Image 1: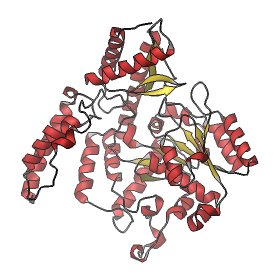
Image 2 (image 1 turned 90 degrees about the vertical axis):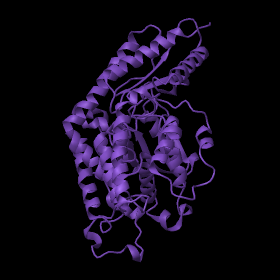
Image 3 (image 1 turned 120 degrees about the vertical axis):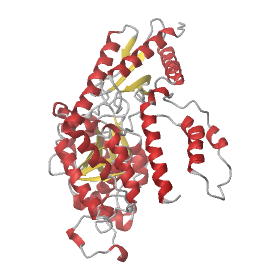
Image 4 (image 1 turned 60 degrees about the vertical axis):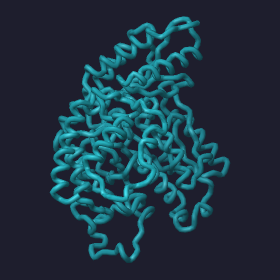
Length: 474
């Protein structure tokens, strides 16, 4: 492909993307394909000769597109979203065109300084104290791993980096029973070990109980173990439960524990002044993460990681082989030393364009709408005699179940599983489940870029009518 063909095909591709986004509602939200169908349709061997772009796009439409789950569909209510937006797509296109490796200031000065400024903007937008400094990481998993590794080094006076974990006592990390599963992966990668991740009981709202954390820390100290870090959830994945940051921060301060707050999804809500009470006490945290690629309309991947002690972060990750030494030295930021990856994409560009295109007020209004529409759904569920709200819904995630009369809990679990499969199999919408108190619970997340109240109303109509059409046997 030469530059002329690139220009022609690029214009056609923008037209295709525009039509796709305009007609998203005509697609089934969840792909109906079975495992192996796409791979079977693909050639076993790579092509020996160049193939025309038209042929590639034809195969994309025939083979790939039917096997895609449409995450930007306005009736995608599953998981947490991985949103994009028009300015984000264009920003990503520019990033791809530049093809820059942004590991240090010298490799791309503008990328480094734009990231620095954009993270200052984000800090201001969410009301985070200026004692925090931000850096863009890939995901909340990566950001939390940075926190755990920094906590490990602080707890071992940086001996773990030099001598390995055998230089330390048995380290312990604490999180709630409802915390994200990625924390288990992080403690394994960090060499802490899954058996040293202590899961603290939760209350009736699925938030960590501070008194139980204190007991666990005291037990470990008495056993000669080394408490290291607490990971609090500002919005759990299952039910968006909010761990109480004030008492948790007090415990961390008393025992010199690294205090990390995971707000991967819920952190975006802090753009709303009226929602900042959910993060009361965050000023005591050592680090905080939220993902603009979830609920701030910036396509995957982009995680905003904020830390108080930048020197500990850098000392944990810094490397300086001869080929990376530059004349600027300490006068500039080299983000390669602020996280796990050496190579870095120009992620800040798309976020910069999203913030400028929406403006703070545009972002706030969109978030407020999502929270309002989720509240509307919550009210419908509370008024329905055969449905049950399963958890508080402080933001835009609603946890509920169908509960017809005359059947036991096991049958209720079964009928809700059937309901979910029937709804998702229809292609009309897509939602997922969790288990709360051991009970099968449906989750519906109102956070998509293009969702409107109409889509939420249609979803409730589909859920309620489908549920009531199911045969119920006692």
